[in-house]
Length: 238
Image (tube, rainbow, N blue to C red):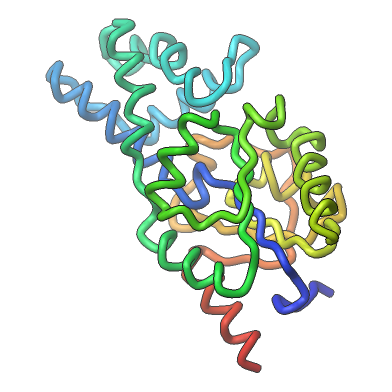
């Protein structure tokens, strides 16, 4: 049986896709590039192409990799394979927006927990995301800090070590994320309690996120960050 919300001291968060609307940001930029060229871009098709390109052997760290990805998928979308447009996609990350409920929910959760960001994004991109989220985090770990990406257990090990330095343990953490592949499955393997934020609950497929080999039933399951914050407050009031 899952622990109660009151049992945790930390909430760790995936950022891109859970708190920041990366699919919306990606599609908005590709749509704008298409509009400039008189081309209509199919958003779901673009996300599917992105997903395949992002996870091939030539992938670089995110989001620097977006310039390479653009060059690979542009012809399939009817767009010009222009390096300047690839750089435009990469730079669009600086203006990607939080989901509508992210900022308020994090502010509410921050009153009760230490919040830790765990993102496969590089530090330069996280700085923009952190500012857009109004800097709610007690600590943050990026791919530049860990030298790896989730779902590599070593990424999580860095966070566990940090928590232990503060006199606590992994059992004090609730891990919150939208990606079954990057977060929910591996957090279960590592013995963590987890919370799945199913951002695509009203849409088919996995969008821009790689499909997991096996679906893992989470300890907690919500379709929004607002619902998680509401549940925490109800649990604390009981």
